[in-house]
Length: 65
Image 1 (cartoon, helix red, strand yellow):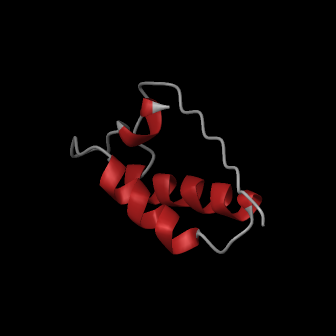
Image 2: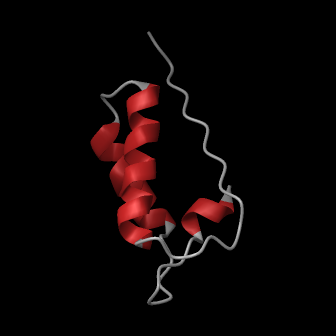
C-alpha cells in the first residue's frame, strides 16, 4: 500500500517509490519470504523507529517459469 512508500523518517523524508524499486531490482533473485524480510529490514533502517502514521501492507509474489 502507499503506507510503505509514504512512510516518513524523523527528518520528514518519504521512503519513496524510487527507493523501493531499486531495492526490489536488487532482490529479484531471492525467494518471496526473503524479499519481504529485506523490505522490512530496509524500512526499519530508513525509519529509525519513527512513528508509523499509516498502515503498511506488502504482498510479494513471483512468477515461475
